[in-house]
Length: 171
Length: 150
Image (tube, rainbow over all chains, first blue to last red; front, side):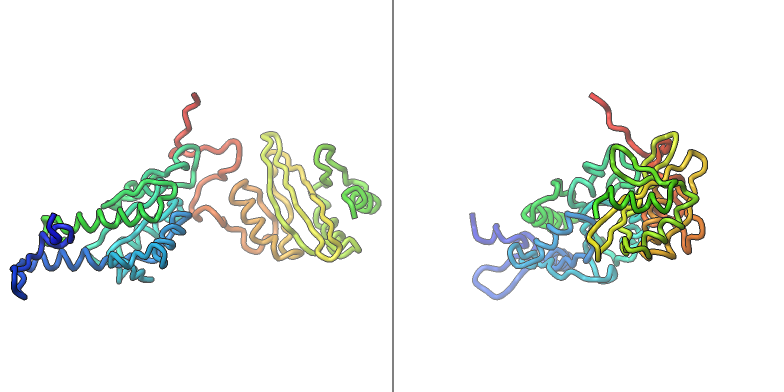
């Protein structure tokens, strides 16, 4: 395998051999830029948030993937990581935060609770059954209870892959 | 002091107090709640801390349980009030212990017990527009999925 094939952006940006010239399209440059600097929201709901924090810290270091700039305002974010149990009381808050994010925006549902309600699916009056039921489109689901930091990093890489392969240039 | 000694001290001044056999909790009628709690706080028993207020729904009645603690004397006691169904109201202790304010809001939210003269009796855990009181036996909610029994 050639070295260039292991570089994620190698399909988008090609280097002309033997020279300092690159060949690409403007669309591909934007995709590459979007995928390489995903700014997540500082937003945690339950125990999954602890794993998300661990992923952000030095041991796992989400910054290696360009997603380490956790912003405290939804207006500066690209990706919302729904990390934890969504209580009914949080519904409005999550919907409003999602609406406040500028396009293009992405959502990662981290953990079983954010996917479907998880262990709170049955016999519970106060838990929302997943991010989908709020009408928020989810790009990547990461199962686990909670998922390990490696899982979150893998989910992030999947999201980056999705962004790089997007057909619609507007998003 | 031990629970029995505290109970005897209460009993001498308030003969209406009884002791629950299983738990050792002191059962008092709801009319004397204010009188007895004022006594417990200011008497030498010195219950300066209201730890917890919770309730138990027994279908025919609702039991209120007040857990009191004395930081200076290192002793504690549980007070209980039996509220008959349909009359779930009791005097508020928010004037006496500041901690009662939110604890009573919690019991109101989850069990529907009305605390009379409470300064701010709103829901505390559930959304303000929530219908019903979830920890009551009679509570049902349309969106709750019941776990299938195998």
